[in-house]
Amino acid sequence: MPHTSIATGSFPSRKEANQAVQRLVSGGFARNSISVHEREDDDGYDLEIHTRRANLRRAERLIHDSAPLYVVREKASDVVQSARSYPLVLLGAGILTGFLIYNLIPRQAESGRRDRRRA
Image 1 (cartoon, rainbow, N blue to C red):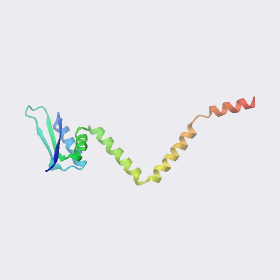
Image 2: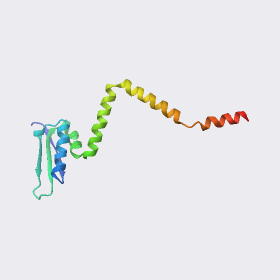
Image 3: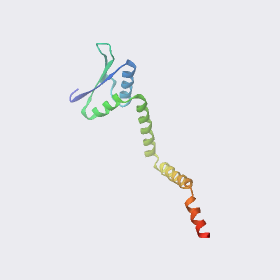
């Protein structure tokens, strides 16, 4: 591949290396550009991916992401995409939330003013 860079990662187990491979593949990287090698000292696994320089930071982020954090980011991305698809629903939810918060604010300050006016 001309003009490629290599992103790498080290993992203590084959399972963690495979999870990183799955994150990369679901992130749009080709499976044939990813390789996993067992270290010679039998102390874990190394992952390499050949990618264009423009995608290097994204690949490194996916490699070094923990599985739970990756799931949270994916779900957050889905929420943002849904919000962009339905902006009026988002606006309505925001207005409803503001209305609820406004009505939950205690009215002690108002009742104190009324009592002073009566006296």
